[in-house]
Length: 159
Length: 159
Image (cartoon, rainbow over all chains, first blue to last red; front, side, top):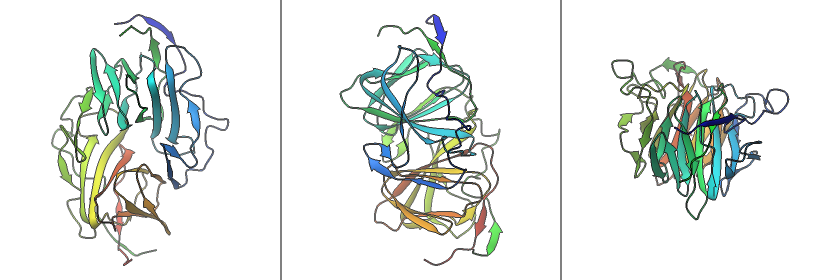
């Protein structure tokens, strides 16, 4: 188990806009896919605002930034070739579904390549990381509880 | 507004297996996509066990049948050409993401064609229906709260 390095705002913890994130009003919404995994009405956001243990990854929040009452958020993340998310753990669960390209998911001591529609459930406390050792972008949906704890980032280990 | 016809076990309400549905034990899991929107370890299930206002639709529960502690379930539904879900409403939210083919989502008085990655948020109480007027299967992810109310099915109206 790698040594714990620090806590940081992370994966799921970009601060919401003022007003509690309720830009909308819990209304029905249709987010048209404009191609290239961009949606009308959905902005690009940084993966995190701190830390340097991650690289070349960004987020698009499909559900969770518009005052939705659902008890979950749905985000799209994309990792460029050579990029990776933080190695981290938290009490909340992750569901990750690959929708673009291929990538690698590491959880505990395991590691698997993810391809289209491969789906991972990460239970509470599991140390995990997503990375892209391939030549094309790796895009995935990541679904989390709306109320969740802050991730704890671990010191990375070289591959 | 169509007349309310009845309540029925529905969309989200297939009874769980004995033992509370906890076939697993809230463990990490990797569901390999075997192609054709079938996953290793994920069974075909009927869309509903009652009613005749729906047709040619089935479900595969990716997350929610294995004792997961996440506050949401992730299901894949597929509607064959000419098929449709019930016209219904409930207090819980739906998030629907098209991943295969094309289909139609109807909510309130609106109706839109859904194509790959188009995403819909259906707020509590919205009357909605998914259907497939096209020649190929229409497959979509549908994410819901783990704890949710029973849908109320409405009398269908001819198109």
